[in-house]
Length: 286
Image (cartoon, rainbow, N blue to C red; front, side):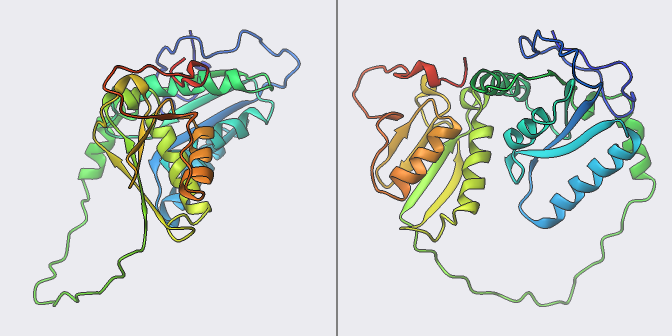
C-alpha cells in the first residue's frame, strides 16, 4: 500500500488513496531525507497555463522548502506526466507524491495512473523511490470553504452589445493523415491519456501538422476493439494499432506518418474473428 508522509501540510495534500504495488520495497537508507511533489494538470495549449503551473509549483516550494516541487501535464503540454515523474526519480529522492489538480475527477484516472507507473518502473534500470498519489482536490474538506471565498467577489462580465464581430479567414491545412486516439472507458483505464499526451507533444516537437504529408490528431469515442486497449486508428488507411505505448507512438510516427509504412508490430487488421494482443509484453495494463 502507499502512504503519504505525515509531515505534509494537510491543506496542501489531501489524504492519499491506496494504490497497490507501486511503492518500491527498497527503503534506500543511503538517500537524504528528500521528498518530491509532482503537481499534475490535464492540458496546457499556450504559455499562460504553463506559467500558472510554474507559479503554483514555486509557491508550494516556498511552503515546503525541504521538498523538490515540479509540475506536469497528463494530456497535452510539457513536461508530460512521464517526463515530470522520471525527472524526479533522477533526483535520488526518498519519496514522490503525485498531487492531481484536476476537476472533475474521472473514476478511471487513478487506475491508469497506477498502471502507467507500474509499467514505467518495470522498464527502467534506475531504482525508484516510494510513490504516493493524493486524493483529488474536491475530496478535501477545504474545497467548499474555498468555493465560498471565491463567491464573495465574483468578477462582473461587461456587456459587448453594439460591437460588431469581425469575421476572420483561415487556411484549410493540407494534411493526409488523421490519428484518432480512443477515449473510451477501457482505453482510458489502460492509459490512453498518457498516450494522447505523448502523441500531442511529439506532434508539436516534430511539427507533424506540416512535416511530410501532414498529420492531425484528435480524441474519439470508443473505436471498438476494447481488448486491444489502448487503441488508436490512423486514416486514410483506417489502420488499428493496439497495446499502444510511448515507444509504439514513436514508431508509428517515424514509420507510418512520415514513412508511409504500417507498423505491423502494433497493427491489427479486420479478420472477422476476435483478436488478442499479440505482444502481451508491451501491454500497458500489466
